[in-house]
Length: 310
Image (cartoon, rainbow, N blue to C red; front, side, top):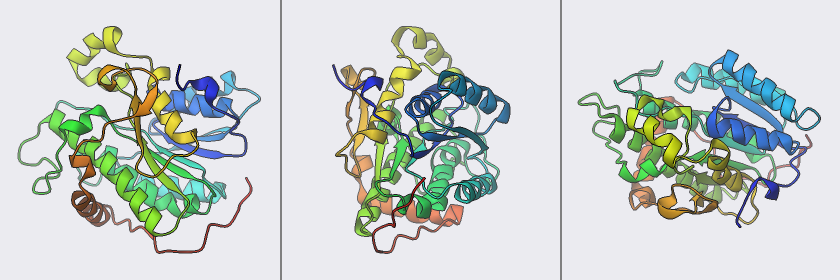
């Protein structure tokens, strides 16, 4: 039958950050982990929507995990830094960082607060900066994971270092594909660097297949197909949850729905495009991302992380 919510064991004592947790697969991911007893930090850009979602999860799991709401705008590096600081001050461990939030195919080119093209800046650079700012906390938590949500659209992506910000000619679908390819390149490169540093933290990735969420509301065709083709957000969250909690995974693993064309179904290993396997491009993108965000990763080899209690 494959993996389902019922296969997720006790999560009590674990601390989880989920970006974009107020709707869609982010909400479902946060809900399930809270129901299993985890302390879930819902990282949301809109505080009103975030509080409504947090209240809903608390009502569904009143005696289970703690649900905390902290503001995070991934399109603003100052907000990313402030969020990470708040997490570090409040918690002494971080078992799961789930990089889920994103924007999808706005009709017109937009920019983040720091002048990046909106999709690359939010989907990739914001999460790159967030992960770097929280990595010390993650690394000192035994068995911690970073889970980055990519997309089937990564297969149409290409990292154009000559026009990374789409200033010459904006095309929303290729720009989205580039941002989701960047997500997968980042997840795999982070895994390689963590392994080289001797960390027991792993970096894995997932995609939700074709899932009917608010993300597709910018594209009329997607809104029409959602009721017919799209699976529910709860089903779309299963690959992320599988990547987050299943034992025996290794850095670089990538999961998606197991049905035809990876559009829907139970989680299984997903196809990684040739471009997402290009380690030279991944290393170059890493260096460019550090330069653009000003976030430098401290990944020198070190002793095993100290055991902490939550």
